[in-house]
Image (spheres, rainbow, N blue to C red):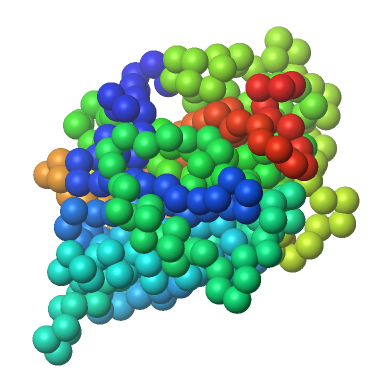
Length: 335
């Protein structure tokens, strides 16, 4: 991938106009990640997992009225985590943001959640879950630079045999377009090649962003063996949820195709993916900030870059995970 390079931060915020914030609780082993847009942008979603949990995804369909959204949320907490959107709405409403209708402004905050309720954290939060507060705090702290690994929606994430995490990456194309990915990796499957330490996403790595190990000198004979984090999978107990963003000029239909390409990144980095027990989902948004309207071959390159960027972000999330008391699985760095 020598003809591509990462952006200056190697984060989704290499696309101007985007900021990201995290909030969570180490004892709970769960949290929320929020992506804010400085102005509404075209967005879409593609859901290929069998057990998703979402809010306001239907409005992203190309035939629906709304042409732009204000924020996106990735959250732990299973269905409880959907409360995080309410906190983000409160933050945006205070700032006067939202879809204008009948003299009111309604912030539009599509949300996806992952299941991290069985990861060793203390989930005895009382009557109301803390995710609304997490959403507000994450939005309030959103910035262009943010941490990856065991933070936000990736705080309590796990994969097959290893902790997952929150990952991000970016790619700059020769035509000036930038594409970035933000992903919470809580997959049922594994990000590694068989029982090795090598990441499946290795062919797409830029520099040594997730260890620089490349492929093993001899491919493991067990690379084709599906490894999952539960002997008997539980419906909804896994999920990889992600956001792809670009500064290309795309409508909602073009953003939809970008989301599809993001799922190709799942298949390059996780085995298995898109199972009955995962809620695998990709949001995609296009700010148009580059002023470039890709067509023909440029659309193909943008999709390929989106696939590679997503795969890299997934590996980076697992690579950057850190250990904590009462973890149920080790981190990659301990292998």
